[in-house]
Image (cartoon, rainbow, N blue to C red; front, side, top):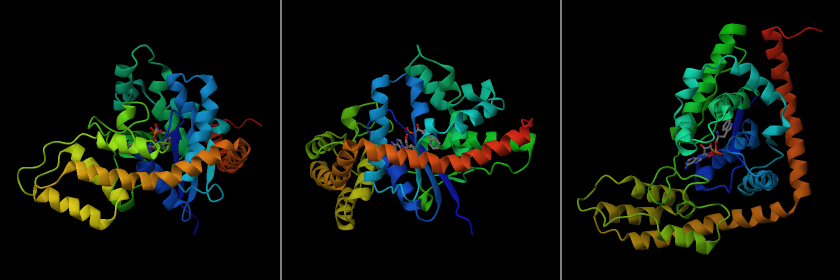
Length: 333
Ligand code: TYM
């Protein structure tokens, strides 16, 4: 039986954080043996915010290094830079003809960006979901491991796939779906309790895979808490739930049980809980950080990995473009 096709990407806009790790990379690693995986650095996507050209290469190399340090094996997957596959912009152009202004303007992430950067509402931002659909459909992927924040984009990718199929030929593109282990899409919140953890928002409330032990301790000790529950078995506020979620991901079962019981009995001491979480988190991140730092020093090896990844990805992308051109009628010779 042929392996299922998986695609996912991460923008090269800064240091990777716990949200990227637990929302995405951890799942990539779990899928790399059983599936046919294409994982890429979304460098074209990062251009929507006009990064300084002198930072781009280092940012791309860092994402690659941090993925490998997190357990991704470039021998098992195609790990490449989006800009190394010219088939992606070609498919993006084709799909743009099937995407409508009205639906693109309604996308919540677009509306957020309009609010955040009113002086730079460029067409790339508007058509971001179309480029993302092209990234996925170029390999005719069925599973897309992403965090909860990308669900709407996946719905649009399914719409574009269906529209293409309806117009040009049924079943050319399969419908891609968000992939979740245990049916559970992860959303890691910022430690200040304000929205999701993100690469650029509050750096003091974001734990990066490159943070050293002391920085991790400081950030976790400052995480938002409150005076604690007053009723047994109370519902947790979001920011406390987030601390438990992080604990679930990095601490032992007995540690989690201890604090869960203390919470339910209204005698939890958040200071102690954060101290424990900080140590467990530091222990978790340390080997990833150290390995990534080593890898980042060796640009030749990273370049080789990207080149080989692009070759693997090109083989599948070229087939899709050839098929799409034929269906559209672009086959003159
Ligand atoms: P990006 O670069 O913002 O994030 C990369 C991955 O990390 C996940 N993620 C989170 N998960 C849980 N909690 C969080 N706080 C958190 N923050 C980020 C994201 O869901 C994502 O899986 N548009 C995408 C990149 C992209 C892509 C694609 C993804 C471009 N083309 C095609 C999949 C398929 C993005 O901006 O991710």
